[in-house]
Image 1 (tube, rainbow, N blue to C red):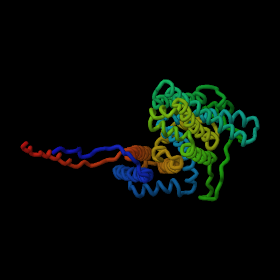
Image 2: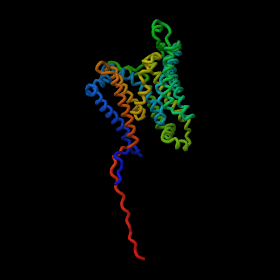
Image 3: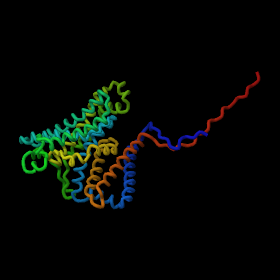
Image 4: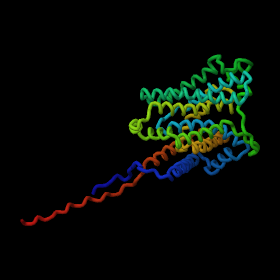
Length: 387
């Protein structure tokens, strides 16, 4: 008897709609179950830990403000990754593109704000400059991919380190326009030049939780999500990007200009990441942060990939997941102590990442348990009749 393998993986010819919701939810549930085992192994009560994480992220006084601070850049880098990944362009360079957006956005704020320009004009100029800075950095791997078939994964990843070195050089290793050169603190420890008051982004204050401030960048991220949804679901650009993502050969046969589309998508992805960088300048830091232990240590660009994967590259889901992951990061920072090491939160985030990747596999493939195959039927012989 011929036996099939006990477990086989088959590609799905059709993807039911319920998978788009069930897989991310199942991935999160599985991740928290595995994380619970890790907590038990390290001597922590999972139920008590999850309750403390939830309260520190969303319930305690001032917790939502800190969660929004962590979630806003994650929303931008997650949207940047989703914009490229939908076309099977794996832009891993949102981290460096965010740095470049912060550099160009801060330059616009320092130059125009220092001249006493009106705040709406200065803020708009910072947004445009930050978007162009990220776009220019994103076009480098885009050009290499479009014209030289170089892997955008490697080039965009390596450019992250280049952008980090540029950011550190501007503040720590040069007397650049971005560095504060006056005052006692400037001679003791290098810092970025503070933005003028006209270049500081305003927030929307509410009376919830004793006063929640909604950053302008958070609202901008929601607008970007709406724009991406419309672009990819209601325009010809989105349809062609979907075709190109499914099959490069089919896209060329249909007359789609592949190189132009690659450049456009990489530029769009880089610009969104750049907006995340300029939001850091205007919303939170109010100066260019070149400290390797500051903005660069947080790894917003890499965590954004996790956010995009968990959101299934849906822009609205990406914003929601960014808020949840931001809450997890905020809670982890709030709970750090002798009994709760900071590395434990990183372990939980890593478990969520691998669970999201496993969930992505289930959306594309079906796991089937093999059964013994029926033996082939013996051929029927027809007796010969005498002539």
